[in-house]
Image (cartoon, rainbow, N blue to C red; front, top):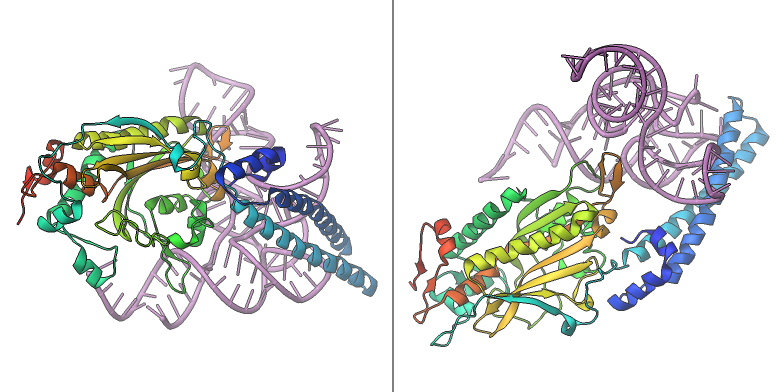
Length: 413
RNA sequence: GGAGAGGUGGCAGAGCGGCUGAAUGCGCCACAUUGCUAAUGUGGUGUCCUCGCAAGGGGACCGGGGGUUCGAAUCCCCCCCUCUCCGCCA
């Protein structure tokens, strides 16, 4: 949420930001409404003040003329109050659509303007044609898509046997790495109300991305980020940073992605994710943004998965973001890097929306938030494909073995 | 799902039509006292909107929304939430 004061102070900067981020918001209308809100509010306060002093002078006895006068004041008050509500609703709606300001490091442009920060790891070379993960998954009895489709619909999958152990093992491994930094596990509700989605900045922007429960003010979360922001709405935090690892299933409609990545488990309606959520002092946001990225990279390095880090361009970032890194893993069957994790610094955009404040000593303000994937089920794609051998078996990375009962290789059944 | 109770400041807890932005206690801050700590005393201690250079002024907020009234934290209606008992249940 961009505060009204900031819009008043620098309307041109807000307009420029909208232009760069492709947001169609009428900033002048906001300014006009804001002015009207003030003048209308002043009249309202004036009338209310009159009502107050008048009724205070009343001292019990209600005479006819006095009543008429008071009723007239009340009529005026109702009128002005109704108008105030209209103005505020309109204003709120419009302001809600304003995207966050960008960090100065963000490259301006579309997908093509994304910058490769670094490439890490050696891409495996195979003396056979590497199989795509969905084939390996079937061969090794790890992923059963047809039967999940049978029970649900397309874009669902059954994770089976050792694959579930992989998920658990990875979660444990990542958690053990992050815990000493202060990250605390939270397995939150996967259904949240609209206000929570608004706070995290998913509403009103991506209305269609969440599955909605009929006749309820509840939607399935697309990421535990949503729950973990809703968690602290209206709170005044007295300690920062607050570091969480959100453990949850995530649900996405993938509306508008028909025909895209239909094979395998890259783009699905439901998946598991361990998410790093940071609430921190504004001065520390940059530091934690980098730490979260290091954590993501740590895991991939430990697993020997080649990856690249991308600094995302303005056009490739959702409205709440100030700056975002994506980490993409090498996918041998496709011969390209694909997004595995995503790490966004939201500034105070979300905490302002959710009225999440901090008060530490004499200092008050809105904490900054960072949402960064730890890992999600997508990592299995990279794990299987990069670890595969000619016979379809998959070698488990050494560092992961302790979490897998020392299992070294997953063999075809 | 059925029956009852309740939602007040950072917390606990009064108030149940005007003198209440709200008693009292705890916490917190400042000052005083004090070898240190503890204890004690005095004062202060919410958020938001708005006018003002400032000092300061006006307004809103006692779960949310509507209503009654000259006047509502207090009365009425609707919704949400919490607790207790019963039922059901992984």
